[in-house]
Length: 261
Length: 226
Image 1: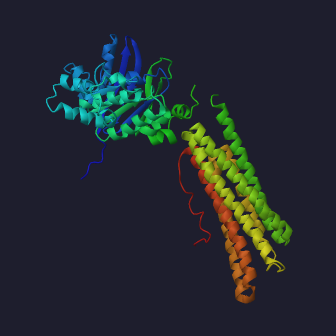
Image 2: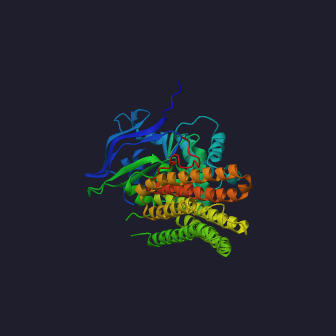
Image 3: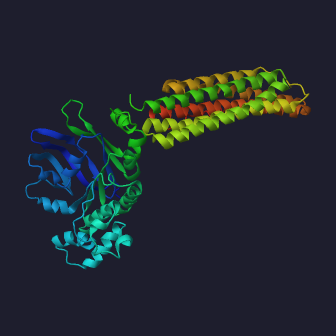
């Protein structure tokens, strides 16, 4: 018998994220499906980026931050004591709002992470593969030794994506990956996401609702709790087509129709 | 309230749909009135006025397209704009039925009516009334009304079957009446279709309000099977 249950890439269980005594994010229980794009949307300050960064323990860099509850990657809690956060970040890569290539050549931007992670294969092949995967190869194949800073913003962002996929993560987190880019570069990144999801699970935070509607399969709507605690939570999590045509929660409806506030 | 401009535009579209609806309602009623009186000039006027109905429909369609392109409607707004696109097309087709009745009137020329019109004006009256209330339900997004109105289609279907049987009797008794009977049969058929299209408007209204797309059962059968 065929099992039609969707495969889950990562799951949160009763997740709270604290900065000191302040719970920035409360009680999140979501299951992110494998090889799908999941968007996190919501008004500013509702904890979208905090939640995203919890998925690869980037919040660890904020001294007072800690979580309660669990984030499970293949059944393993990422916050267990025996887990190495560096290993977590290898499995769960991240692309940021502003492209942040290293001040090195295009080639080295890809090879560096792989080297650190003990890659022993053919580096030229890996670089080409990664750049092709990020739809950048044709534009840079003749100038791999040039500085990454010579690339345009859109190209730099795709280089950062190439750098992320070079270490073959399972999940790619994207925090507003196109907000600093022009519309054409934005569409290129969006198209790229559709190709990337053939192999990777993608979680994206975006302020651009049309972008969430275009690129994602599932959408998590975040909002501050009604109790005045200023703590954010996921108020609705559903298929994107449902969120944008017939959401269940009135607050989601108000947000996606632009009547929030 | 944010999106004041958009809200205002939506209200404007709804007003235009009501206006289109009242033009169609008027066409349906007068098409049968002029037939009853054998007023050919009046019928010709209805045919000319149908051009205005078509123009109004395209004008609303254009407004809707602009709103979709510029406002990126989502959720309820999206359902409303997409469904309004459907509704105006239903209205335009209803206008065509009235125009069809007027054309029959013109084609009948000097011929007299085969029989006095009693059930046919009744069908027009019920159909136009259903149409009027279905558009009120649309504007108010009144789901209860939208669910109740289609049931009245049964009465129109009943009248249609009655007219049909009556006209068949005329033909059987005197085959020379076949053409005049056929004209009236077409008139009744057009009116029966008007009521069916009202049901479609009601279905859209329910969809706009609830997001549930479902067909209201049994209203699309012109011949009732017992």
